[in-house]
Figure 1 (cartoon, rainbow, N blue to C red):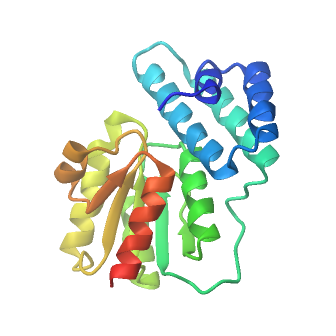
Figure 2 (tube, rainbow, N blue to C red; figure 1 turned 90 degrees about the vertical axis):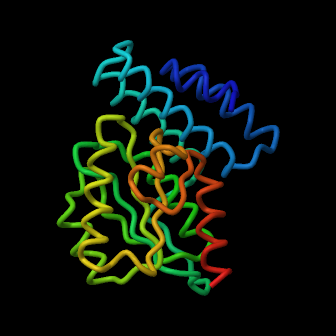
Length: 210
């Protein structure tokens, strides 16, 4: 995916990003699509961090820039709707990873479509995932991870879920920059997506097909 907004956020160019945003909004661009572009931009920032081109300060600045843009778009990950619930989803960023903006975009989309979402936040331990799954009995678990160093952490969480007898009928979707066929198969997830809109559609299909 390529766009002027993605490029500006990836470059952490706040002035340009806001100018592009204004132009896109004036042109009638769908806010949900713009928020999805922010998700991709953050993944690219994370990739540049892992390559040593960006530093922690750059990650923080990029996160703050995206958070400000989301406010302008009027997207609130904590919002809820009164429509009929499609299902219950637990979402969290795996331990040793503190990235949450992409996760929050995904959550805001889920809630807007009628899902009940329990946000565990970031740096979520295996024990917390297990505890909440036992308490809430969600239909779907979304695990987010940006850094390649946390792949085995995600596998640990899913293995623990299986060992606790909680794997079925739970559906697990992997999100973030780690989302891909090889990673998904390795950790034992049912699906993956680095695209928040695609991830939302996967969750909707799971619930509709039941």
